[in-house]
Image 1: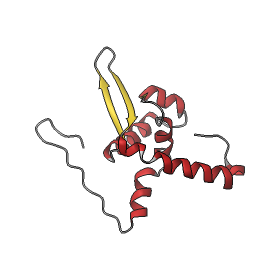
Image 2: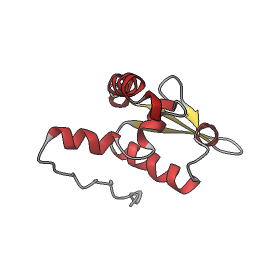
Image 3: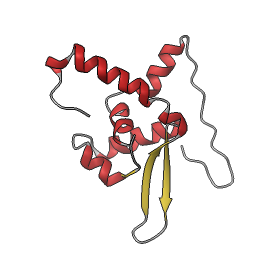
Length: 120
């Protein structure tokens, strides 16, 4: 899945019939929107993300972060040192999704208030 140093990684482009389906595929899923919401204000390290999303497993968090990176919504920055440090932040493309998530949150707060137990 990851490129070898001598070969660039070329992700297979997904094709959609409808632009709405394409947009929903990129930001939906059990954890993608929650991850985007948690890093909207500042970059976070992997451990901090896990603390903010205690119900997600390490494997699932890794999988979702990789998907968000692949879709160019999240960037991963590695810092050298011992131990090595990695931070996740929104890309410009990822920042463009936040107003959509805010609108969806506002709608859910109003229309689904009786079904919401906590805020992401």
